[in-house]
Length: 102
View 1 (cartoon, rainbow, N blue to C red):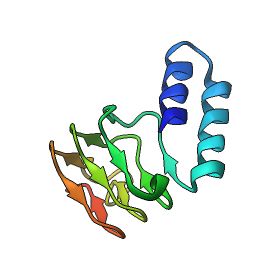
View 2: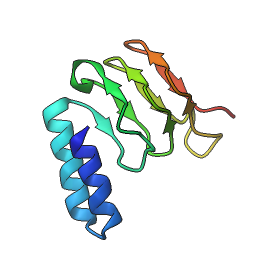
View 3: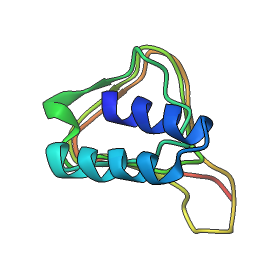
View 4: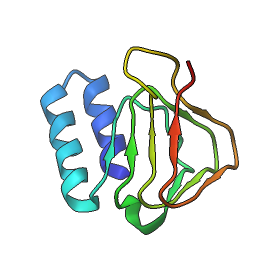
């Protein structure tokens, strides 16, 4: 997760190539893709170092959320419908898919 926050910082300060480099590093080290545009608080936990987790940039995640390995959080269909909003204190089990609504 630290690489995701580093990527957010780089994107915010006008360093898009560095942000993409941190995203690639995160994918190589953890085996996951977490878009730096996603609204993820610091108290979000990823089990097994987030292995296999995919989080879309449009989603919003609340405080104290625990995400199991192999979880996909994203839009149901690109360009059709809203993004997922996960409330505080939720546990998302391994292999779950959380899609947006129409």
